[in-house]
Image 1: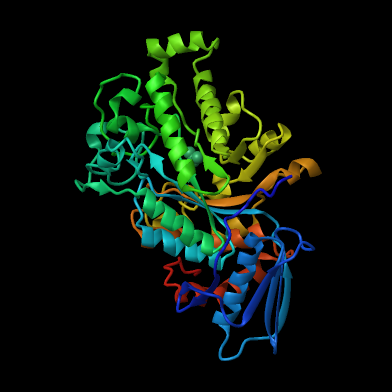
Image 2: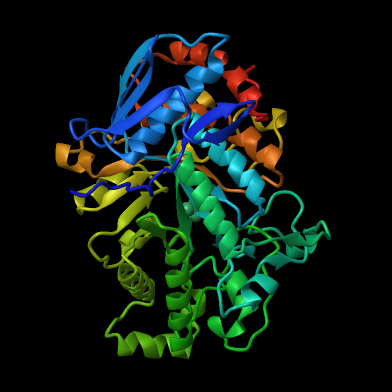
Length: 471
Ligand code: ACM
């Protein structure tokens, strides 16, 4: 099988100093080389009085070894310890997801997250770039996506409850938004690549598209109807329509996004797509007949199929949230499992590669202690101990099925994470526990991990990360 994570080459060695990762070209004391004798994800680092040498099985593994070296140098107090480290991660995909659609994060704030990921040898940043509440990526030929779709007039205050009486909702009255130019995203790709992090962009379709429909009403199911960018959370009924114009739009968007991000994957969402508007649409029914389908819900499968084909023309593999399993799926897709652990078994059993991103244990927008002690969060309760100890990979998988699990990923949905500081508070230290599991250190108890975590916190301090205190 081909390497599931082929990173673009890293041109420089990386060294961490004063809380940021800086590139030096090359760092004088470290010689590096690739070795065909090592597995692709493995590296070997030896530091001895005569110098330091790093060999690795791939460019991606070199990045991990460089990051380890940078950490050792940065931890050192005057002199660097002589060590030999031979290491290899349990999972090729060690991911963090970041929702920049519900609350926009600046390029600098994302760079700080990439630095923190490199510190933890996390190597995939999944950027959730589009949603009902904001469209964040410049697409040439569609200026209204960023003129209109990137901005919402105001945001709901407090919890969103779908059953609440709308007349009781209050709003902050503050215009909110932002977007990234294609050049800014290319810069971010380069920044991440130098630190051993691959960016996987997500364009969530065919649901979670209200911002795009607000920008171009003809993309919706009632052509010409004006709707705004969504100002509350929850699931919007305003999904994509089924006209040729919509499919042409998706081709343009996916092709341009594929051109910005050089990695092998593009995420096409697929979660939480209500069929309400399709059921009420004569155009959607006519399409269903034309396609020889019977159930309205099968329309989503058509979108998935189309997106997979368009991305394949750009040499990309599509990833989808696990709802995409509900309709016929093209081979070769990657399933990102969020709803229940059993979905991992279903996806691998059907032959798909999978990333484990289950809400119960990897959604870092959940409370990390009882709500009365914490800032407002979406719900749930996932402590750092849960992240370290909870079962993530279901038992009972065959060796073949286990081998189809690419890795694990933490999620930072941002409805209730309005600032970068708040995002860091929710991410850390849970992200540290996730990273430990993703790398797969030898069996350790929670108590052992907790002790090492306490010793690790000064590194977070050095990076200026505003983590949640352990006590
Ligand atoms: C999701 O949480 N809607 C993937």
